[in-house]
Image (cartoon, rainbow, N blue to C red; front, side):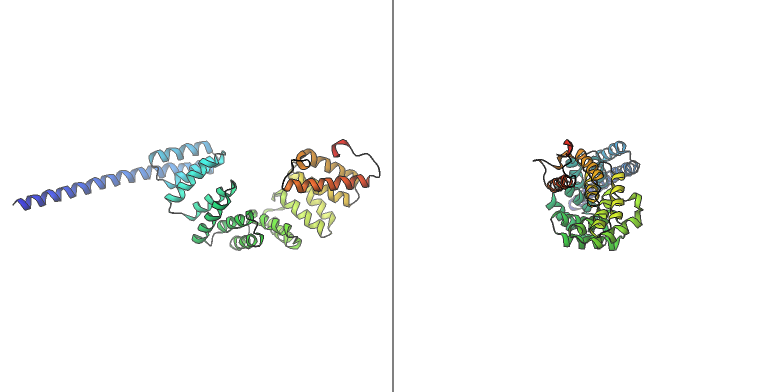
Length: 312
């Protein structure tokens, strides 16, 4: 009799424990559903460029359930949008962990790392994303950008080609490939890549940098008139681009148009006074050398005509 009574007590205890767990799971499920609903509303606001509303909704979702990976992802994007990069990365790391390393979240985390200069961590995320999603053009684009940041140009170009094989019209990747062709002086390939970019976007919609690269290639191939049109188009698209002005000055001087070259060079210097001087570094140091070279050429072409103070 006593053993039967003890067995009944044990069974009651087990059933009570199971009931508590079931109630807890129901509570967690309701919290998860509520958080997902708020996250969904947050993404709708985000896609409508209502970033403040989106950030509030994602924060509310995390108040309901801190395990909602979508809320962490959305909040990361919202914080990134307003320049809170460190906080954004922390939430994206959480999104990756909670989603069991979903490739899209891994790829986005890698992109964030790369944009803040954490290149080694970006490399690791790009490889992890690639292992899980080799058919993703975005993942191959990230891999290419990581390789480019490491100075591995052939490998980066190969990754970009894989991305374009999966998604032929991919403007960011096409422009990056064109940059590599420029650095390797492969002007025919550069023009072919930019022709495809313009076919997909339209000449007016392509970035000003594409016009600059196209102009450089045209000039190198002896197509000066077409090069000039490219440089002029670049200055019209982005009036603040000193590179386009400098390239145009070089071309105009080659054509013997000294006055127009002088004007374009002066504009380049006004747009970017740091083109010359002791503080010019990296790419700017190269520009500084180019500016000095063009100044000397202008001085020689002027046959003793005094240079204006802005060009000295």
